[in-house]
Length: 65
Ligand SMILES: [Zn+2]
Image (cartoon, rainbow, N blue to C red; front, side, top):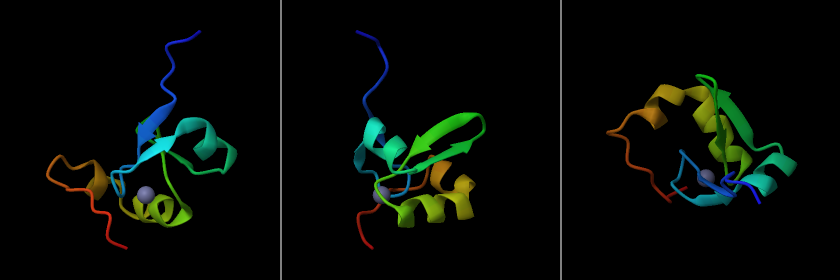
């Protein structure tokens, strides 16, 4: 057993994603030396476009597409 988290929060939409699934699907982006996991390509691309926007504490994740 490890203490590795198996889920992470998608910074784009706020969804909980499975780390193993995101890794297997290539839905991982690194920013500031920290990995971020995404539910889909759309969220990853949007995050890569403007990471600061999604990491801003004032940003409210939205499920709207
Ligand atoms: Zn998402």
